[in-house]
Length: 212
Image (tube, rainbow, N blue to C red; front, side):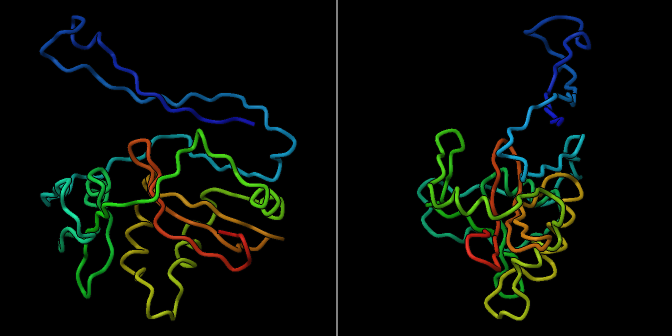
């Protein structure tokens, strides 16, 4: 199979001289196709990659700030909008949105769950569960968000504005879904935003055991 690696290349020739310089260099994004041998045990893993880099939206008109280190409440601010530029600016500051009544709240919990990928070792029970499912990426983003929204549940915080906002981020290449399929049916998944080397998971759902 073929995977895509995206690299940022700095073209110093546009400045006329090596650093230190006064004129900023040109930054060029390149997509490199690399052949990858997939182990037989991973044949149930279907990866859907996008041959390109995310599209940077227009900047937000709002002034966003990160909370100070000694701020201990989860809710940091209320207001602004859910435009792609606003969402990305917020994620780059460690903020994420949730409705607060009829307004948008911006949260920044002091304690968060972080899963480093390199030292992660799945348990035996997780490996057994994994064999029952097919894992796909970005093949049913809207359906995953809809599953996370739990229609009819009054406790759900994912409303139509959240679904539309993250759908737009997905179209721009920033939001992604991880999907669990069984016998051709979507039975679980999660969605989130990939920015700055971090994947921030927003919500997950499951319809059968161990599918999220």
